[in-house]
Image (cartoon, rainbow, N blue to C red; front, side, top):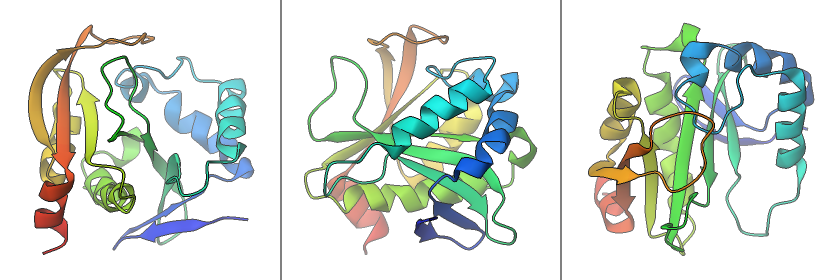
Length: 189
């Protein structure tokens, strides 16, 4: 049964359905999408999608936010991307932080969909009082992703060394952050 977590003007953020795995593979098995995602295998196969779905099916700890939000168009419920909230990777992660990651099918780039989806998920992350900051990382040359983070209010904290294994990507990334007080000023006023 599909669970809806949030709706925006044009999007539904919901659970991923098993029947959508071929669509998931179609969207992620595109180099222009996969190259920005440090831990996504490429080529992306049905087996990869099945493994990902199995991870999503594992019960979350009570009170934790969903780990993955499928992003679908409101008009036809078509899967176009995903947004994730998870514990930060790496050894420098802080207990009070949560990391946000996202991707969007190439055919949907440049239309503001991801800014709309991520803005909604930011608020979901901060509904948990123990979360004091949301963070994200981007490749230095991933201007589109950086624009999304700027639009929704995360601040560029500068270049950091990636301290976790990545399937591809640079050893250095830009770290982005929004603290709880910043979120309250920007989203709750």
